[in-house]
Image (tube, rainbow, N blue to C red; front, side, top):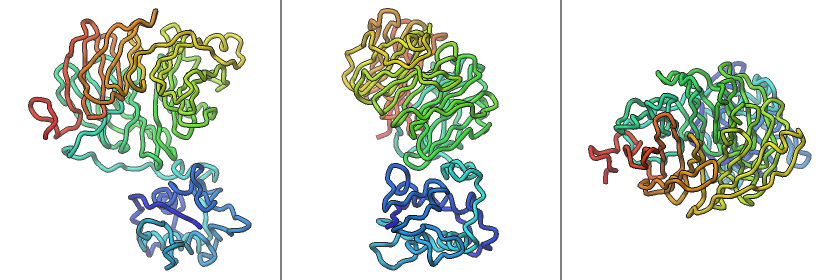
Length: 459
């Protein structure tokens, strides 16, 4: 049985479009992504059918028959189960039937021969559809949204914060909203500025439906390029220190490395068995480290993709990763409420894969430790216990604990030049502190239209 879970969306194409003008890439793939893919991808494949690539959609099953029989809608399972009156068979189940216009498009496409115009049939459907134009952000937020990403501009003058379908920019001294930049996916997971400050990389998507990496002009918010789209979230993005490389961590378990500013794909690493939550370049850009939900952290050659080291010391999901300033040590944060410290260079020197061994660990977290950020001689972390912590990179001693967020802390960003650190929480609050004396600089709720004059959530 072919099952689909209805998701908001649709092409809005006219039901009477001539069959010869129906494009799989433009008209059919978006319907399958929005209406069917969540139940028929690599993770679920209900009824034994997969619709997440054209190749898999067209693959016939000896017992179930073909989902699509070119030229024969009446013989195609895809069409049959869209129009059946049997509630137990009709797809999508547990949801309203597809609009007549979308069913007509699918029928017309099959009748015209089920032609394909998306290039490589092995590509995920989200990789072949035209780039989405995202709806605008709300003018005023009805409720605070969790802060999942933060990034200081390279000069420290502004702080970029994740929003709903937008990125907001704030003055990190006064806490005043500077500007709003829309045109991004509903959820932003990570933000990174190019070293020259001219480009902002935005990683995010919609869980289970879409992942994408966009490059924006930092000053104007103008879209520069959609670097790529994926079938699930893009969870992290990082620039190399020299600004020549850009790396993305993906929920499909891949790490993708691109040249910059051309944004040309140089490498894809498919070594993890689950989400890659975070990535980090070594200071010289030669290595890339990863943190994954598959309970491992790894180090790869950033040019060849060769795996150099695997660290399994957490035994649970790993959320954050950074290199030390000299590139010899890797710090990883995980679900075990610890930061682990291990050497990356043992494997790199021999150019052979090895199992990295723990050198030390940082404890004292009340709950899971999430993101990590490196400052000038300091390691900053955020945790589900609501605290931002600062440890010395040299001896790993705790220097300060920054309080006041009042909820799970999901994001942390440091700016050594201005001696500031920022934390973002589930309740939508952002706090900025001075790392010189540990005192608060400003606090605000990063949900425009929701903040009172006193900077407090409206009741």
